[in-house]
Image 1: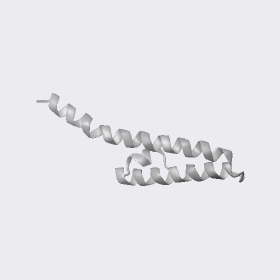
Image 2 (image 1 turned 90 degrees about the horizontal axis):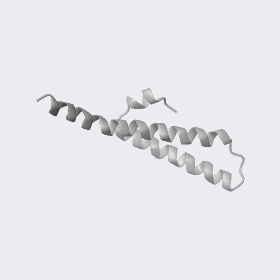
Image 3 (image 1 turned 90 degrees about the vertical axis):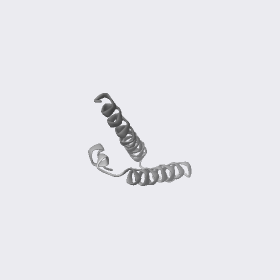
Image 4 (image 1 turned 60 degrees about the vertical axis):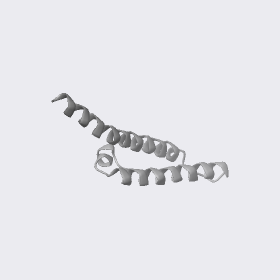
Amino acid sequence: MSTAKELRAKAPADLQKELLELRREQFNLRMARATGQAAKPHEFTRVRRDIARLKTVAAEQRRAPAANAGSKKDSK
């Protein structure tokens, strides 16, 4: 998985695509655990944290234009 710095350089559409892939991976891990297949326990934690990191960066990107617009109004 990418670091937060690398994720910030990506476009919002790319972040959504990567989020979808991570959610699918998380689902597959849950199904593997439920059916008794040997899954690596650390993968659950890694995927969950990667999803959180990605959602945090996406939220930062959504808030950034609003923050910039607010600062322009104050300068008038």
